[in-house]
Image (cartoon, rainbow, N blue to C red; front, side, top):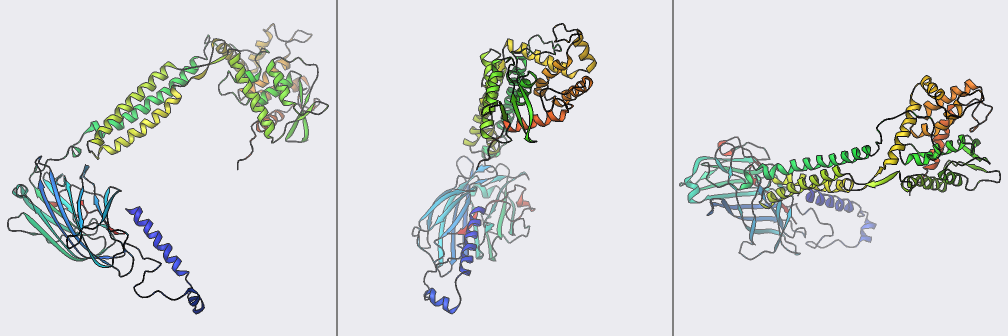
Length: 613
C-alpha cells in the first residue's frame, strides 16, 4: 500500500502544481471564464485520503471450530466524514492475509450501509493485504457508513511466553485518517472463556508504543470492550488476551518444518554447486584432451604447416593472431613493414619471389593487400570497418582450418554431463518440496521456495554449457599443442641454454662456418612469442642479437638502423587495434506475550490499512 499511497501523493502534488499555473490577474481571470458555482464539481480533486472517520465501531467474535482451530467473525461499522466536494467514491479497507507464518483465509461476507442495503464493492490482493474497495463510479459526500463483515481463522497464537494469545491490532496503523470516536467489543465463545488465564492488556499509541489503555471486561469474563476518542492518523489500539497453552490448535505452517522451510534452499545451493562442478569438469575435459605424451621438450623451429593463424586454433588463450601472422610473413621474406606517412599508420610492402609456406599464409597475403597500389604497398589503417572485417574472417579461417585438418573436434564431457544431471535432479527435488510447503499454506516456506526457484533457473541456464559440445583437440592436435608448448619453453629458458640447444641441433640453418644462424631461428620464433604474449621479452633478445651482429632487422623499418623492440610493440598494438576496430553504435508482528505486559501498539495481528478511493 505504500507504493499506492506514494502514487496518490505524486498525483496530488502534480495537480497542486497545475493549480499554481492558473492565471490570477483580472485580465487572465476574465479570459479563464466564470468561476464554478458553489457545490459544483471542481476540475482539480484533493487527495482521496483526505477525510476522517466520525466513528469506528467493531465487534470481534472469536471461537474454536470442530478441529480446535480458532476462527473469528468481524463486523466493522465505519462512518466516514467525506468533504462536500466530488473527491471520494468510497473507502479502501485493507485486511491482512497472514499472521505469524500462517494464512488467515480471509473471506469478505458483505458490505452494507447503516440500513442494511448492499454497497457495491470489489476486492484486490496487494502487499499481503486483501483490499476491500467500496462504492462505484458515483461520488459520495458527508457522513457515509460502511458495514464490512468478514471472517478469519487461526487468529490465536501460541506465544513464546508459553500461553496462547489473542494479540490483535484493532485499528490499522497504516492510515492517514483520524478517528473521532472508536469502540470495539471482543467476544469469546464458552470454550475459550473457560480457558482464559485472567491476563489481558490493552495498548494504545503509534507503532511500538507501550502506553496502556482501559480494557473493560464483562462480569462473566467472556467479553471485553475498549473505547477511545480523537485518535490521530496512525494511532492504534492493540489488545492481548491470554489462554491456557494448547487452547487453539495451531496450523502446521506455524510448526518448524525444515523439509519445506530449509531443505529447498539447501537444495538450491547444492544444485548450484554441482553446476559449478560441471563447469570445472568441462575445463578439466578440455585440458585432458590437450595431453599427448605428457612430456614437453624445448623446440626452436616450427614447421611450415603450423603458421600462427593455425596455431591460434590449437593453443587456448593465444593472443590476436593477426599481428603475429604479419610478422610471420615479414620474417619469411614475403612482405616488409615500413613507416607510413603517419607514425601510427604503418604500411606493408609485398615482396616478390618468396615461397609461401602454407595455404593460410596465402590467404593472409590476399587479405592484407586488398587495394594495394601498383608497387604492392598497402596501408594498415588506424580505423576501417572493411579491414577489421577482413581480419576477422582471416582469424576465423585459422580456426576452421584446425577443424578441417583434424586438429580439433567437438565433444561432450561425460563427467560434466553427469554432474549437470545431478544438479537438475537436486533442484527439481528441492522445488517439489518448496511447492509442497506453499500449497500447504506455509508462509515460512516462501523464502526457501524463492531461493529454489532462482536455483532452478540458474541450473537450467548452466545446462546449456554443461550439455554442449565443446571444442577439444584430437590426438594429432594434442601432439602439435605439446610441440608449441616446447617452443614456448625454448623462448622462456636462459640465453645460454638456448645457444647450447642450437649447437646440438643438426637441422638448423647454418652459416658457412657451420654455426647455427641464430638470427634466422630467433626471427622465425618471434610470431609465436607474440601468440604467447612474450613479444616484449623476445624482442629484447632479438635486439641484443642484432646489436651483436651489428645489423638491423631486414623486415621492419629502416634495415640500416638498429632494431628497437619498441617498433615491434608499437606495430603489434596498431595492427591489433586495426584488426578489431568496430564503429560505434548509435508492518511487523510479535509473539512475545503481550497479555502479560511488555507488549506494544501494533505488535499483534490484524490492523491492515485504511484509505479512500
